[in-house]
Length: 405
Image (tube, rainbow, N blue to C red; front, side):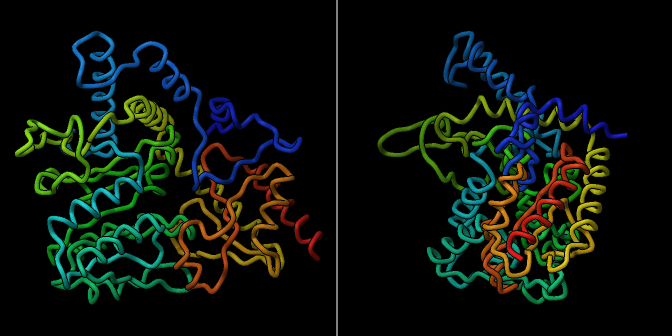
């Protein structure tokens, strides 16, 4: 059995009170809370081993470098990348996608080419490709969704053409919770020789990822979504693609030799890690991954599935509440609206009751336009949430209805 009460003791913030009420944190899609072991690891780095990596011969620099590179190897094993040099440290999912959009785009995209994304993408997997299309005079194409929030897969084959240079798609929608059948989508793209980028920001914390099994060319995620510090993320790329792509930033450590006449770039992975990277939080990410592995993804997935089912059944009993995103395969996310009540009003009242939810467009305005709404209230769950907290969310929504009735 999954012992949620024991797990909650690992997260100090979960014992907090908000407006005199115990905190019920349902904003995990935006960022997750951090276990004490991650907090301790970051503090220990700064108090015992802090020194810039790679460029020193003294003890502290050696220690810091070793911890950083061990973190890279741990992440390689975690997502089953073939080589450690396929793991690039970035600032997060957004930084990773921007890096690929620029670097891949400079090398492989020209006027008249096409980039394919889906209608449920986060802005971070829309805007960088729009910027690329503007630079290169290319065209952005979109896989449509249906009312349930599921991709219209029959449209994928026709949208993938000889002009398509890359398919960039989310694994799990941050708004709808839809789990896309990415393996099938990757296979469709590969039949036409098209590389695929997977935005794993909303999947990395919920399911086991095996990039070799998926066979995607690129997979990106953020540390802060998987119980690690903010400001650290991962760009996984197949070695043969990364070797062909030019660096997107210049500076220290990404060079082999610099003269005023010409610069020769460093090998992977350093070619894409210009300047002083976030080496401390890379260690924090590695510790967070160890924590997740200890809990076990089967345990996490099973418990979160129960939470989602319980919350969905409970909220559906509220008259006038509409859930957006009813896909057959969903992550632990519920986006909803209470009839004639603005999501901000709902969110603010819930906050006074100690219940934290996210309100607005969730950086996915096109999907809001599809449903013809201004935004939603989003309750996104994690393995440290409880059924009692869901009951508090439910009671809070009844209170909102009464206040605005």
